[in-house]
Every structure is written in structure tokens, then in C-alpha cells.
Amino acid sequence: MTPRRIGILTAGGDSPGLNAAIRAVGKSAIGRYGMRVVGIRDGFRGLVENRVEELESEALAGILTRGGTILGTSRDKPHKLRVGDQTIDMTARVCENYANLHLDALVCLGGGGTHSSAQRLLDAGLNIITLPKTIDNDIAHTDTTIGFDTALSIATEAIDRLHSTAHSHHRIIVVQIMGHNAGWLTLGAGLASGADVVLIPELPYDVEYVAESIRQRSMGGHGFSIVAVAERAKPQSPADLGLTDEASTGGLAFEFAGPTLALTHRLESLTRLEARLTILGHVQRGGTPTATDRTLATRLGTAGADAVADGARGVMVAARGESTALVDVAAVAGQRKTVPLDHPWILAARDTGLCLGVPLD
Ligand code: F6P
Image 1 (tube, rainbow, N blue to C red):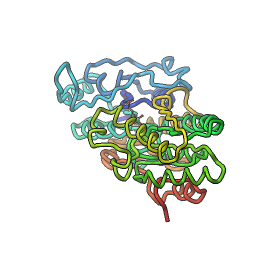
Image 2: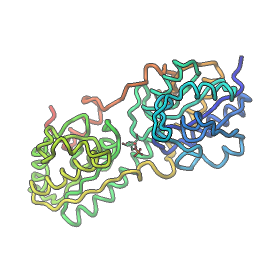
Image 3: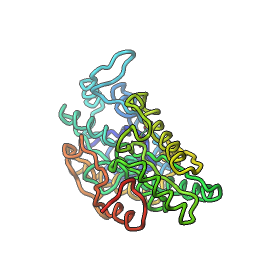
Image 4: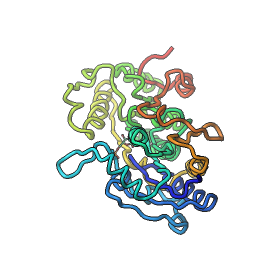
């Protein structure tokens, strides 16, 4: 039987292109397949609390270019939902509300955490279709993710702007870029903007080696350097930055900012060049999506509606070249796509003289 009614939600950190994807799923489900679409507020929490709204065609108009998500999002997981002072497993409530809403499928737009939650709900008997979104580009079995291209463009433009001020003041500018445990954003933006040093989680760095590459630039007449650091890049030894183990247990903000700040100070003292730190933070997730993200979101969204109409169950709609592919959520949940050390971006960085924090063959 053709599905008649689907739910849609966005979960995890927002990323540019979510509204374009909601629009594509909705327009195609309603216009092409005659389905009804229910929007669920604030990720899985909205399904627990039954905060839903019927999405008519008018609600989907004018949102293609908007950043954020019209549905709202949260990082809440159905099996570990914070309610007052307690953490409760709400899987049964989610299943109850899914049944009461007469949903034939739930389309979840999310990243790594969302795929793990999706797998639990599949195990509980729901039908879930996912679309990969995250600025981190770290979802397995898809070429890319909704939001990555926009964040990459923002980070690249930011480094371009830091270049001219670093050059004028003969400074080191360290710029911290998001990406969770993957270096895609930092490496991509570093390559695109011609950063001098790129430090990513996949390659623990040697701070002395980094300082030496900056000293060499200085001796060669380049008195400034741009150091692009992924938020979770790590030194080979925390002691190299004068960090103790406690430095990484002081909460997320400190865990990310602390080592990058320590690196900035250390480079200043090792090179005797003035150094400044810029943390790009959530700027990378805000604002209107690029044309690439809008078209990616639109083709993944329409393929998502096709998958539901064809009766697919438990699959992620992956980007595969110019096309799409359906991949079992089970193969994606719990996996993270990090940068392989033989990736063409790594080789291109090495071959153009970019310092990656350690010597590479
Ligand atoms: O996963 C996307 C991401 O932007 C990461 O790059 C970053 O570490 C994290 O989310 C920040 O999360 P929050 O918005 O919850 O601070």
C-alpha cells in the first residue's frame, strides 16, 4: 500500500540546507505522491511531547534559502530523554505517538547521533528514512552531507579575511574551525584559502615541528602565518602545550578552546612572533545555504520522498556522485567518516607545501 502520511523532523546541530531539504521532501511527498506531511518540532523531543503540525504546501513556500530549520531541533535522544531531573527512556512513548499520528514513515534529517537514535527506533518497529546533514561531513557511506559546503565556504572566507590582517601585522593567526572528530572542514578550508598550517584530529601534531615551519616562513620573508586548527585537533603529547589531563575535563567549551588557546601561546613563545586566536564557532552553521547545499538538499529530499513512496524501510538517502543511493541505517549508525591519511586533499596539501603538523612521506 502506498504510504499516505509521513512525519518529518530535524535533529542534532542545525546546518544550512535543512529547510531546503524539508521543502523538497514535503513538496515531492504532497505534490507528486499525494501524501500528507506532519512536521515534528524540536527533533525527537517533539515526537515524545506530541508537538506536531500538519505541513501544507504554503508552509513550505519561501524557505529554500533560509538558514536554520523551520521545525526547530534538539540533541535529545528518545532513549535518554531529560525530563526535569531525570533521564527517561521514552522509546515506547515515541512508538505510541507515531501510531496515533498514523504515520507510515518518519523522515529524520540528522547527523551521527540521529542515525544511532534512528536505528533504535527501527529496532522498536518504526519505519525511518534518514537524510545526512551536518557541517562536519563525517557521516559514513555518503559522499557529502547537507550543510558542509556552506560551512566550508564560510570558513574559507573567514581565513581569506584573516590573511590580510595577519599579513599587515606580521602575526600568526590561529583560527579554530568546527568539525567534531573529523578534519574535513579544516582541511578543506585550509586548502581553499591557502592556510600555512592545518591541524586536524586525524594527525596529532608536533608543536615544535609546527613552530619550525613558521620560523622557516619567517626566514623566507613571510612574517605572517595562518594556522587552521580543527576544534578536536590534538598535540602528540598534551604536555607539549603545557596542558594537564584536567584541561580536557573542564566542559566542552574549555575542552575545545583550551588546547587551541594554549597552542596559540606556545607558538608565540616558540617563534617570537605575535599570535592571535579566532574561534569561528557557530558562525559556520548560520545563514543561507550555498547553491551547492540547496541543490544537494533538494535532490536528497526528493529522493527521500521517492524512497518512502517505493516502500523503502530503514535507509539513509546517500549522495553518490550526481545521483543518490539507499544505504541501510544499520551500516551508518555508530560509524564516523574521518579523513583518510591518503585522501587526495591530504596529498594535495603536502605537495603544495602546507604544514600538516607532522612530516609526511
Ligand atoms: O556536529 C556539528 C557541530 O557543529 C560540531 O562541529 C560542533 O562540535 C558541535 O556541532 C557544536 O554543537 P553545539 O551547537 O551543540 O554547541
